[in-house]
Image (cartoon, rainbow, N blue to C red; front, side, top):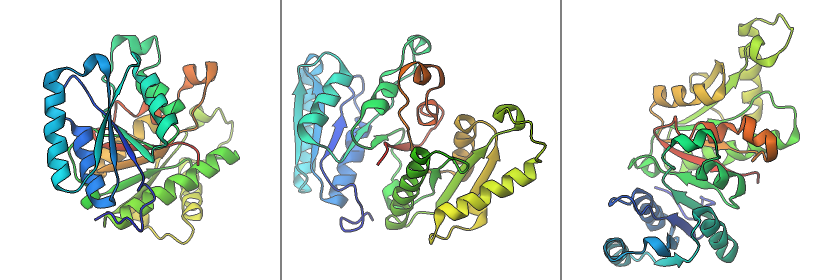
Amino acid sequence: MLCNNNIQFNRHILVIINPNIDEQIALNKAVRLAEQLGSTITALIRKKHAIPKLMATLNKKLSVAAIKGIAISIEISDENNLLRAILRAQHEHGFGWLIKQPHQPSLTDHVFLSDDWKLLRNSRCPVLMVNANNNWEDGGPFLCCVNANSNDSEHQVLNAHVIKVGLLLAKVSNGQRHLVSAYPSIMQSGSESDQVPTLLESDYRSACHKMLGNHEIPDSQIHIVQGPPELLIPQVAEKIKAKMVVLGTVARSGLQGILLGNTAEQVLTRLKTDILILPPE
């Protein structure tokens, strides 16, 4: 069980209501977490979607939550754009984290950035993308994703943040801790080095142990794999049956962000489990 004294995400939760479905998975997740963390919840919905049927469904859920002692408020935004509505709510209230279901991919995503990509680049707090009704807060494999060969300080700080948060969540929920880092092939890296893959794998594994510091994880739970991380992270998550994947985003902007994206963004549609995306601390 998650503990209010041990978990850092114990502040106000912002949950985004999906007007296109009856079963509000993100709200259900927020309620379960709030029950354990003692948190309060704000359910955000845009005015154009606040129709009687949806509001009746939300009010029923609020009544059930109230019986459990959970404080939930509904905020109806007059913003037409979802991202603007979210960022405005974050600015006004200062939430501890945000919970929503992932955006469903469409053909326009190949031309324009999806709403979720924009959100990850602009969110002021960690974003939990809820893909399933799994109860990771009651245990299960947690997969922390890092770049074990990062030379820049921004990625190093982000690696440390991902490990700290991911291992903490796993600890307080009695979940199994896993770490993954992908190392590039010579073709990917553009290197002329003749270093063999086994040596690269060994170097990355050593770097992971160094990053872990005093946190001990068996070698069998440290996954060093060759290839692009956006493809390999979902494969490892599926292999270990992860209930939660934790990774960070450097939130690239401008042309570089449009062309390259971030690993966090690229795995959103490939992962079938819950994903916690951490902005730089």
